[in-house]
Amino acid sequence: MRKLTLVLVLMLPALCLLNARAQEMSGGVVFSRSRQFKIPFDAGAQSNRLRQVQLYISTDQGQTWQPSATAPPDQKYFRYMGDRDGYFWFAVQSQDTDGRLFPATIDNRTLPSLKVVIDTQPPIVNLQPLSPRNGEVGVSWEIRDENLDLSAADAARLEYRPGGSTSWLPLPMPAGSNQTYWHAGNVNTVDVRLQVRDRAGNASEAVTTVSAQSGNALARDRQALSSRR
Image 1 (cartoon, one colour):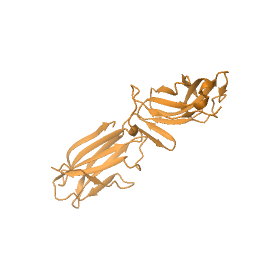
Image 2 (cartoon, rainbow, N blue to C red):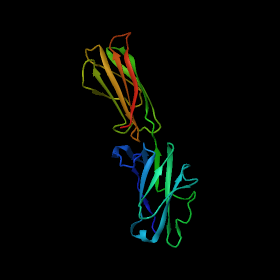
Image 3 (cartoon, rainbow, N blue to C red):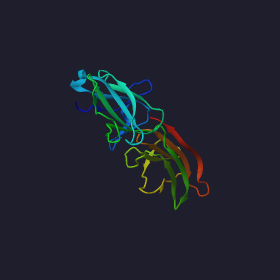
Image 4 (tube, rainbow, N blue to C red):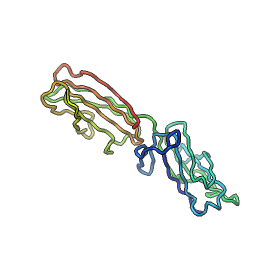
């Protein structure tokens, strides 16, 4: 009997399909900002020889496994409802109509069919103005998140707009640094915002205003406007 295939499809609490941006695959791991999954399995042409399919879960990277859910083969999916964030491995065991199990045992030698990181927490983002320097304005930032990949294209976006303008202009974020200075033109104040998205799709935003005049670096500060887009 061949091994069953697991594929994760993220679900809302009402078990409706989420937008594809709510999940990301990285290094064979699926990142999810939802604790509720629908996990389809494929029994193929052997479904009429199966009695049931058992889903197992491991929270210690395969050292121990616990039964999580069962499903008849014609249901073709499991519903998983977690109660916390974390790193989870999933495996399946099928039972045929004669009572035989495949694989025969689920133990620390079992390889996972699916690896999932559940992360429902938005990044913590702090953005601070710096004092003007040689005609330039600047900001510094701090980002805290366990599942952030700053090399991803949409992981972090730094932008500014001169006071009174409605258009945001991109700012580079120097690699290995948490601050930047730039020439903003002949303006008194500059709005700056930093948008951050982790691999599970949780998003946060911080906004501040920088004064171009020495001794008045901070005009206003709106920090950590978190969202889950």
